[in-house]
Image (cartoon, rainbow, N blue to C red; front, top):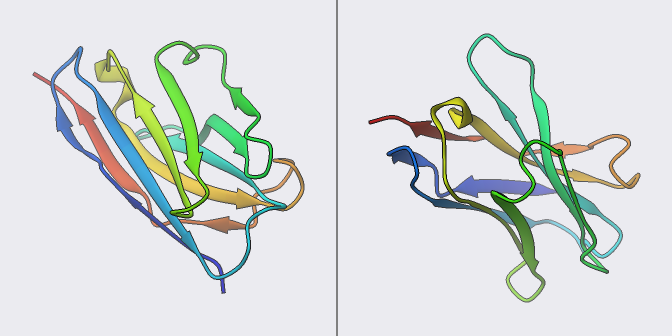
Length: 119
């Protein structure tokens, strides 16, 4: 049973930073691609970033590249999303997900963590 548990969300002022964590458990993730998604109120869920567990190759939605950085710590079985220069439009629930198909389809999802950017 794969389990993904996000943490690190919260309230931050515009221009601030947050680092989200996704603790993964339940199996070996060497063949997985791990992704971060977000869903703002009234909007569809959107892709943020992904990383291949084994090689560490990274992928970003174009609009966020440069402000957000995805990484993973194999020893801790944890994926991170470093978010800098946060803007009010980054307010959303952020979800961690795991894919066995290179990101074509995500098979497992975490429960999400709320990020609110407001002064």
